[in-house]
Image (tube, rainbow, N blue to C red; front, side):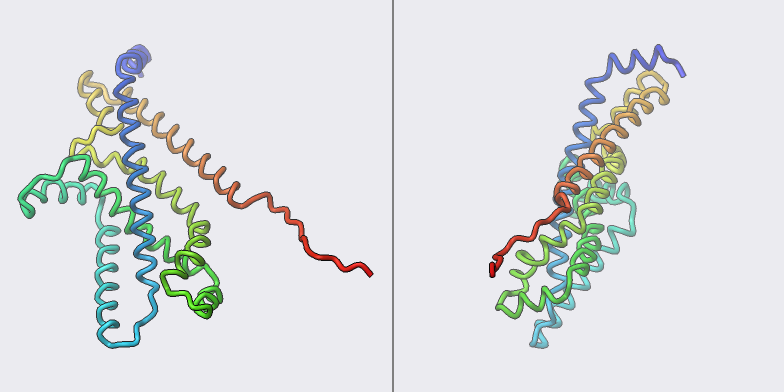
Length: 242
């Protein structure tokens, strides 16, 4: 360990490390939010009751098969491979090249969406079935039931898992260096190549990754506590005096 080199790299290249960290954080935030939205939409679709007509049932069955195929493919293949296939395969099949950053955001989003779909499904199943029945009894449609009754409760239940996906995205965004995204890992690799030393720049990158994930984890735990409330409730109501 060369502490002089460590200090020199930190002093000289800190703007690159900051730029890489901000890119990593930006991609992770967008990917997690978009993935959560994808997961919510899939969750709503997968819980649609069976239609009465045969044609609608067949159509819904096809949609379920396609969604399950999407989930299995993106959960069963590495994100690095997905990034390579999308970025380098687009010119072959579409005839035009997708920009690197756009490719990165697409891959993070749809990969996160595949995992969030199962997380959301678990969150929906955790809501008492009686609330579905009560909402339908007062005339709510399936979409209204999900938006106004089920999803607010499911979102609270899946908040820890969503935060975990955010932390995973911060770390897994490093695989995007294969398509030359200038995130934190890419910057550390570039600086290491300049000085033919990899330990010092990657040690700095590791520290930054830890700071990012630690800060995000603590903020999410604080948010969970705020949503839980104080836990102290006072029953209020009319009291009859005799």
